[in-house]
Structure formats: C-alpha cells, structure tokens
Length: 222
Length: 227
Image (tube, rainbow over the protein chains, first blue to last red):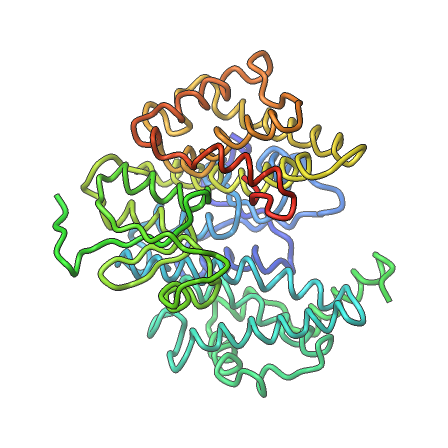
C-alpha cells in the first residue's frame, strides 16, 4: 500500500496533459476523487512510494493501491468501474484501433511539441514539419466524425484533448494556424471544450504558454 | 475452436528476427491460433504492408477478417480479447492485476532497453554508466519476479511476452562484449526465468535464427534494434 485512504486519489500536476486525461475520465464517469497537486521539484513521500520506478505523475490511488501511467489508468477506470460509462468500445477490433491511436498520440505529440519550443533553427523547423504531419494524420483519422470514437466521446478523445490547450503554443512556436492546417481538428477541439469534464480539467491556452515561457527561463533557453 | 474459413484467416506480416514480431507469434501460439506468415523485406516493403500500416509502415501487422492491427502491445491485447475462450489467458482477469501487468510490460521498453542498448553500443565512461543503469533496472525486475516461474505465475503471460526477447538477446550481448550482465548470484530469479522462458513449449523452436542475429550484431551499421 502506498497510501491508507479509502476511495480514489489522483497525484497530479496542474498543467500535465497526462494528468488531465485522468481528470477528464474521472469526471466523465462521475467518480468522486481527491485531487492532490504535486510539487515536481520537491517530490512528496507519497509520490515516491506510489511510483518508485518512474517518480512521475499522474498516479491514481484506489484504496491506497497505486496505478501509474495515464493510459493504464484510463483502462483501469473502465475495468474497475464497469457500471460507469466506458471509454473504450466493446468490440475487440474497435478497441485495438482506439489503443493504436492513443499510442500514436503518446509516441508523437508531447515529444514533438517539446522540441518545437526548446529548439531553434533547423531542428525547430524539422519539429514544425513533424508537428504538421502529426496533426494532419490525426485529422485524417478523425475525418467527418463528431469524435474520434464516433458519436460518443471516448478513449482517443480523452487521450488527445488535453493537448488542445497546447495548440496555441505550438502555433506560436511553429508559426502556423491549427484552424488553417486542420480545420476539422480545430472544430473537434472546440466541440470537446464544450464538455463540462474537459472545460473543468483544462487550463486556458495562454496559461500553458506562460508555463512554457517559465520553463524556458528556468532552463536558460532563449 | 476457431474456424479457418477465408473470412477468419489470420495473417501476420513480420521479419523473423524482430522481438516485436516474435511476441505476436508466441501470443498466437498461446491461443492455438493458426496463421499465414508473410516475411517482409524492410528494405523493400510490400504494397500490402504499406496499405495495412500506412501510419508507421512497420512490422508486425496482424490481419484478421481482412482488418489490420499494428503495434505489438495493441496486437497482444487484441489476440487476448478476440480469442478469449481459446488456449490460456494472456492477461489476468482482475482489473488491478491487469493494470500492474500493463505497467510491467512497458517497463522493458521504457526503462531497460535504453541503458542496455547504450551499454552494447558505446565505449568508455558512457558504457560503464549505461551498464550501472541497466543493472539498477534489472534489480527492480528481479524483485518483481521474486522467485516466480514466470512474471504471470505458472504460465507465460503478457509481461513475459513483452520482456521475452531479453532472454535470448542479453546472452548474445554478453558474449560479444565479454561482460556478464545477468549473473546467477545477483539475479537468481531472472536467470531461472530466462531458462524457463526459452524452454517453454510456446517459445521453444520459435526463437530467431540466433547465429544470424549474432552476425547482424557484429555489423554496427545493421545492428539489431533494442530489446
């Protein structure tokens, strides 16, 4: 046991898109939980006990037992609370597609975004090209659907939507407009933003931009 | 029992030396699923592969009832679900145990592969540091295994499949570098597991052609991918 408390607790960091996935999922399922903001520069005993391997957020504690890694947490919430609305569909092939695209978001978006704001010159230009390709690929997968899952807000939507708060930053550092390059994705982002779970979990894009500016200053990046 | 009508045919696109492809082969064997295997030439990818995996253009790709699935861990979960009532389960039933299983399955690629690959491909201080980092992570794994026959218990499961390539790749790296990494004194459970894994009916005779693997590793330009 990492903790002693009964019920659900979420160890998280305010701007973390991975943590936000969990907050959105918990809200969509109507599951009450205790939010515990973590200081990542001075990690708590609880965090180090709950996630000794990675020492990262988010961590979900359920009756004191830790679950780490945001997509694993999403799976766990579906499986441990089967009476609540599920994020994943029931058909094995549809589930495989959802996992594939959530994995794509995991592999591509955050890392490329980081390179976009951390680097300059040729490497930044490369990151920009990659980001455009990533967004276009995701737009292709979304197509004309209301959500990635179809009619209902689901697994891939939850996995990707926190990054919509980072679009403004990607646009500024990459000098492009998401609306121009990927109008369907921009519309999807707006649509998701109207959901209470998303509106309550995401921070305004300007705040994310300020956070990146602060990080750049801390790391001495121009 | 599964029927092997045309519509139910299973196809696997892969290359024999890839640990990601092997994971899928072992999983299909656990379930007793028959499949057609198509060996790809990564230097000259087939039109079918590019059609089935346009996003990553990689192997493995599993095709079932004409529909493709890519990414080895995604494929493994699909196999467990699509053939739920065949063979043995690949993931446990309990939600918390499933979460732990998924966590440890990723441990290999997230925490072990990078320092092991670095150890194998660098020299001097960088190599020494990578070796120390790899040992540290292997000790975590040793503790997790803790005397069990397999990570999943008595039979091979998801974590074993994900970490399985360690069992044959590390001895090759050790032979080439002349340095032991998994010693029996420090890693009694992992040492036993490596033997159990390689000799299990699911895996035995379904390992990559090891002498070819060794030859490939000797050519830096063509060095095999990480564990």
